Length: 295
Ligand SMILES: CC(=O)SCCNC(=O)CCNC(=O)[C@H](O)C(C)(C)COP(=O)(O)OP(=O)(O)OC[C@H]1O[C@@H](n2cnc3c(N)ncnc32)[C@H](O)[C@@H]1OP(=O)(O)O
Image 1 (cartoon, protein in one colour):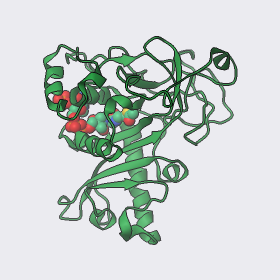
Image 2 (cartoon, protein in one colour):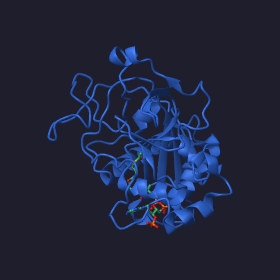
Image 3 (cartoon, helix red, strand yellow):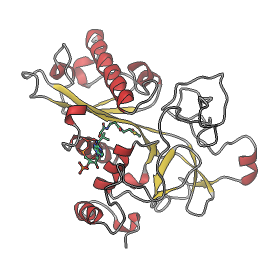
Image 4 (cartoon, protein in one colour):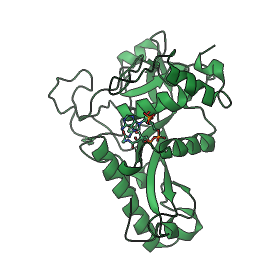
């Protein structure tokens, strides 16, 4: 993705980490001109990601990033565009309070790191850039992908997670987040709190705030998957991460769950498949195998 300004001036590192401040390294601190360019880049990436996912509106923009406690990892290629650099893509993550169903179907309150948006420029997809960015984030957060939650992952992203991280078996949820087997293992009791049943009947709803929304505070309708097929499926939400509102994505197909099937239908992603064997071999060095439940 090219811009009419020098990307290398804006972003000194191959991967930059952006947050509420919209500052990328020391250079852009206290430089409104550079921050305006950074905002342009984020807005453009957000639009491209929304288009790629067929969302009705971007879920990533500079103004949203400024008002939410999320982190955006931005990958550039410094050599392209005559040495001015190009933006390759981005990955946005943030902590969210979620009410999830564990393997026994018990509601659990937890606040995992969630993947909220992820995009690699169209012409650069399937070149390994997505994995580079994702691995950078995992290392930065010192986290395994099985311990994260995924906000309505697209078929391409599900395929990506299966291929690179062996994440194939999801645990069915009543909200739009996807978690995989292993998510509920190896977490301390403090991280997983069983929700008393009386609370579920009352003020706490077993749903979570969705990022991928056209947010309409005043519209209250049933969330996916309960809404009628042609209803707009909007939700009540606030723009802050820690809200407990009901959520849904209006314009994309529902996520595939338990086990995740291969997008396109021609990829064998069963745990016994050669694909997964390859994946296991690649990840064995860094993953705790028992966490993933392979042993
Ligand atoms: C919670 C969310 O953010 S959901 C939104 C996810 N984003 C999107 O769907 C936007 C469009 N897609 C993309 O931007 C990218 O394809 C990403 C971010 C999903 C992956 O980034 P890439 O750089 O393409 O991934 P990378 O090259 O490291 O890995 C390739 C693997 O990803 C998956 N993948 C990437 N593109 C595709 C595709 N067009 N069709 C199916 N699978 C794909 C496949 O598993 C692929 O492996 P394969 O080529 O052997 O089949």
